[in-house]
Image (tube, rainbow, N blue to C red; front, side):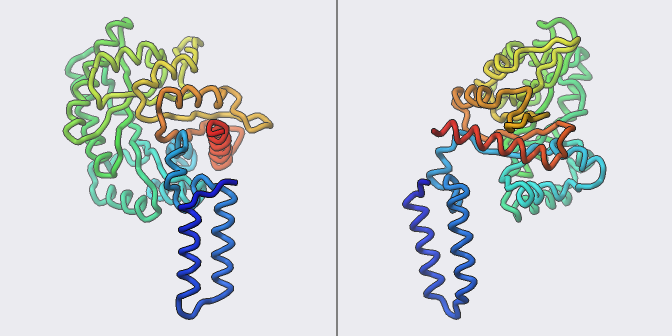
Length: 327
């Protein structure tokens, strides 16, 4: 185990402060010392809040709210408790919201204020809002396309209020591949020009159909040609329709030059703890090789494991691969 000089200095300073303080409870001090040493042995890379060691991590781990969609839809979990659960139950420091779980609250500043406060109180960062159900940004009808763009405005301002860096949208359209490229790029360009005024990014996920063609989606982003328009590569969403699948590794590699977030989709795991559909080691090498060192979001969608167990299994796999990348 390697412990940084800075971490040891922090440790020594804390111990000295406890020893010099009034009415020291020896049992409490020993308990604190044990906890600190346990933290070092369990995760030396992030001991004492990270510092220089944390900066060397190839990526950090966040939690996508969709991982808990059954609990949320079923009433076992309230949206307002998501940040606390991410931190307390899973030890995760950053979260990605889904608009479906507070659909009617986008313009409710009191409610958003509660979300923001609860995240801050637990030391959790809000990264983005995944937006669905607001119309097709690439609709062939110009009026409907414009309406879809405007429907997303409230999510841009909500994300800004919460301290997020992006909203995630879909590039839904119709027509030939070339027609859809032009239409989706037009809608995205309109939306990103609004988002830019709020210093927010608009990022597109491969989310089925033509958007799961990595080359096509990369071409859309190039056509939009705006620094605030990017991608959110998802490891698993490469179903083109009609039982046709796009190569997931090729697709992620094509989208990574524009990535502002990454989604680690997971479904099932083998006895060794590996995801059965995606080679995480191979995929994360592609992610890191592209120069991306931001958050990789856990998005568990499986059914064999419970949502909590699926999240933990995905986190464990991401941590294992991350350590391998450091070696």
